[in-house]
Length: 91
Image (cartoon, rainbow, N blue to C red; front, side, top):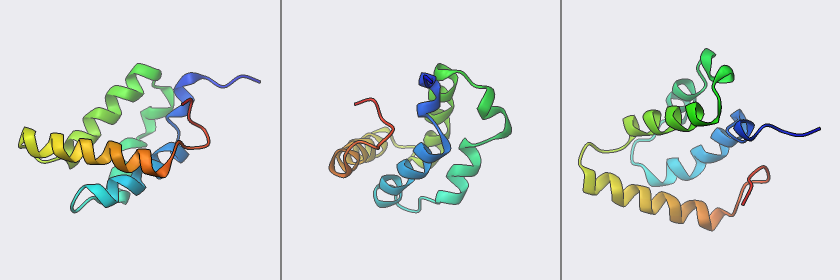
């Protein structure tokens, strides 16, 4: 049975993503993040909607200052690379 591409953005994915987010973003609150991501409408979202929703939610956890936010995003990417791809990723 095939899996929909949108399902890569699953509850498990966000739990895994919250690990490097917690180590990278000062004051990151995993519970708040998951509550904002996994809203009732989330299951009906298609791939692009899930991606846009994720970006929108992450924006609330990043500093308003662009250069500070960009620095954290770069650090986040490096943290994700160190941890390796998730078992359900398509890398």
